[in-house]
Image 1 (tube, rainbow, N blue to C red):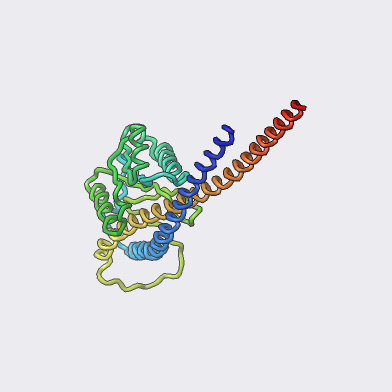
Image 2: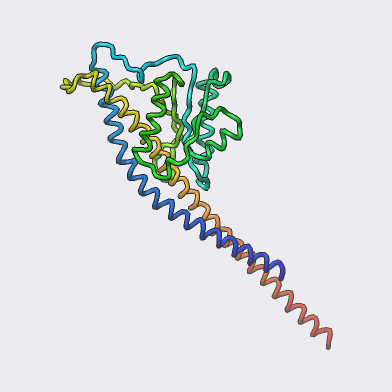
Length: 290
């Protein structure tokens, strides 16, 4: 009977865990829907804004100089590592951390070895990893996801832009999870500063009329593009976190169902064996009394 009691206790424990994982799955699904709508709405605007910036820059015959576009030798590099504040989201944090280490070792090996590569952790999990391994940690931001909006993203974007302008860093990159769907998050390495102009595919020339002048337009567009890019990265990571957590909790709930089924079968078999043993004992005792 002690074995049966242990099995019943374990079944009860697994059922309690299943209730928790099921509730967390529903909460993550609700948050995912909200943040998925935000990132899918922002992406077309962010892409078009970058296209406008590229079109204006390519249409300028004379050289245009802007400190945010100045490509200099990357002596000091900052990697902005975007993770979550909480766990229970599968490999969400581990994958992006491994990507950051790969980028440091493969793309910036000289800066990595000489101590000129630093990390800025957005999210508690990334900060904990950087501290535990005693890597260079330039700063930590853990509250931005509590009330994520464009204003909070703008403040962070302005901070890093100022550090680039003053020469504290020669290059600033993002490592984050880009949201694709609830199941798939794409680990992404993306340049932030200096502003990188991607070459557009050649096509029919379009004669735009720009107002105000192109150089003034670029001076206004570049900071706006950086702010929108920063906000998009945070939204991507936040939506990916909820998608990863919903998937992880769904799998945990399914695993709990399977375990409950197996334990129930084991309990029934053990109970049947116990009953059979008692019957045999009774029959044996009755035969002994004859």
